[in-house]
Length: 417
Image (cartoon, rainbow, N blue to C red; front, top):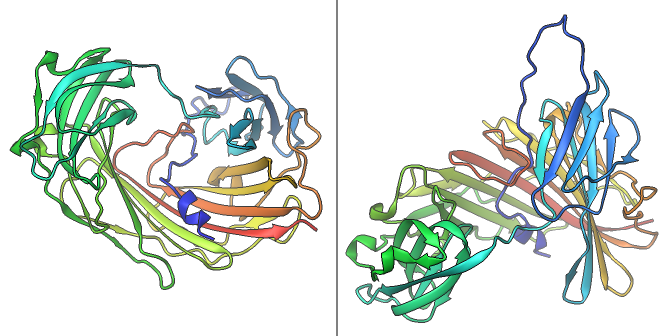
């Protein structure tokens, strides 16, 4: 089973921003309002736990959940149910639980679906005939949305997010390795790039592969899977694929600007019982040269004791030099006909854990709209994951430059007694 390696994708941490608490001891203790805003895909049900109390249903107001903590209460948990998704013949139901404190923040961001922006046409003409080996073109705008073209010279009309975009034009070979990159900044969409002039890729746009090394792969783990992305200040994402696992093609200097940054990631996994995976993502504004990632030490797998809602133990010693950590526990299971999939994911910040090393999946079955506990005889897939960060990130999925994001994970199965 290799699912854990595939699911241990880019480590985007769920760590809330620290908020300052000004004033002095003579000021009265005021209630704290915790708000979770959903940019897209608002939930269909929500509940909250204050301190050590029980979960109670809370209303969803538009695309927000708001909970008022009593004076002096700092710990809270917010649970929400995302709308069902139909994936082929399977209906997917997902519940998420955030366990945090006011130290982590009181204004959180989340989403039940990836936001697909309004799209519009960008037109132009490209000429990459000077790039040896090029057989196709890729065009990308904000968020990486764009298209592949099966030619290297001629007019194009593709869809990218509407509004101002940094438009990246890449020349690729037959394996979709990146041979050249040109980035046209602040282009208006819909509209024509380069003011209607032909975009010519030449010698100054060609990439020169640099070493990309992933070290500290434990015995029994597979060859690391590399990932390299370049993100502009305009939030255009460029996937710098290389068929070699030991090199990557940096963006040429002619197309770089201050504020752009790279994301380098390596993931390795084994097929033990349970499965294990380790990963490290590094975002940096100083990319372009050789890169070495040192993977974290593996986490010896500890399977939870069989139960419908098990308790997970997080006995990992930690990531050296990393200040922020979140721990996650997840259960997934299917109905008898494999037509309905269910998932519950609990994520706890280090402030909420406050030295504890366990997470118990809560019973939310009595709350309107929430999943019931899996019945006896159900085969559960469980996953436990620890993510670290050298800086504090919001509950928003936003990646910032100059971060180190290590992660370790284990996955296995158990039968509900």
